[in-house]
Length: 436
Image 1 (cartoon, rainbow, N blue to C red):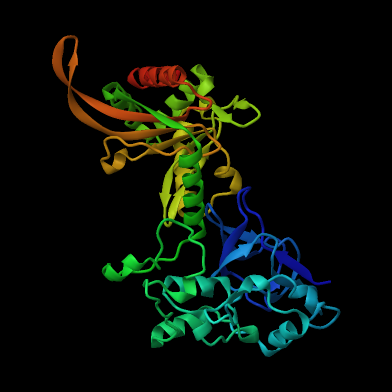
Image 2 (image 1 turned 90 degrees about the vertical axis):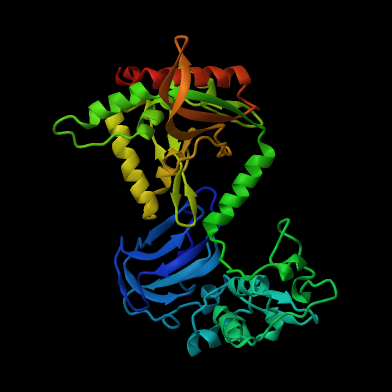
């Protein structure tokens, strides 16, 4: 019996994703555990593995397709001896979900699509003259970004649907440009609701210099949505404290210079461990606000902000309060490497009770961060630099690092946040506490 491969939900927040590419091709033998394709989620690019043996009979949605909804059929695996459109295969069932494949259809697939199921309503839109135009989501998005009217572009997809290659051809030969009304906006986009305060269709763009259009990835869209919601809905307030880290640097040098040591502990590793200990001393900062209750966590799972191509991801050091510096250092290096390779498993970046974001390596003195929901606090770590300070009634030079704590005022009060920063400062300035 043919087996449908569905678009998986690879994280709790995932509603759609992008099929980056197919590792297998139609006709390949498939064994359980084989990687079928790579899916770009709101957090990372992840591999999808087969759970059944068979033959990859049909790829329903091609690599590079964006906006594929969770649970949409993306491929068919056949058992031995089965054919994609024979031996009991229900073509109507295969084509029931909207297919946004950008690959050239085979005659068999095109005829089956036309006979079995009309194109989905989500793939059509009215043109300026009221004519119904069918186009894939990716084609519509590219057309809008480049000021094209899909009604003026011939479609080469199933049923005359406009697909990605049609938009690219129109751009290459200079056809399909949307007409301008007296206000300077395109008629093709005139009836579309604004999704942001500014878009590429704004009349002011006529006065801007030439620019490159960069497609918005699924990760970037989710980052934009979540951080906008966080900034709008969470009442942030910030506390800043300067920490003298000369003793920490001396301890770090001693640890890293030990004969036979197979690790290199970073300043950020010290910060992660110190944050976990400070949360143990002030657990009222290790919380989440909900409309029903404040959730206070019993474990310190510290998320670390990692910059990757196309966005930001926060892998988690689980139970950082129960780990030593060496274990934290090793875990952090492995997670950062996996994050930049797009190989993080969902449990390695979903969750976390507190985030540490460090821009010190870029020479940033101090900065404010936006809280990463459902967490209620994030620590911004600046660079350590030598500054003139007054110590014991005398002017001296010390290495100072500026920390800025952003908290959710709905569940963390000012005195609570101040107590946490006091504990954190004390631990970092007397780092031998981290060895206990």
